[in-house]
Image (cartoon, rainbow, N blue to C red):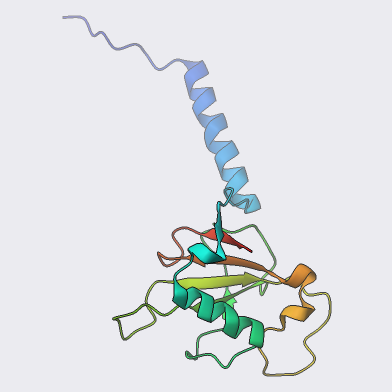
Length: 145
């Protein structure tokens, strides 16, 4: 019996290779997918509390609050190392940090004036950019006010 499958022609191979190459180039450039926005009023109340702490400059409840977020998954816009910092958003009913975070992007316009202070929003261009993740960095939404 004769096979009904068509051979995978050279043009199909070329198209497949071109698509793979283009995908690799986009990933290498670090372009993040477009992010939907979330209004502050739509965030859980604990996220609002974390935003207030960030704006005050702390004190933060976790030692790891304010550490560099490296954006390895490239789900946020590409930026130099140290551009993003992460902060815990408490989850009621659990005793560990949980999965919720606010990540702050800061393009510094002035150097930090005081050692030991992790982030001064007034030293960020346009006050910084804020992102929320409820699923431990699998997805992000830009916080809009």
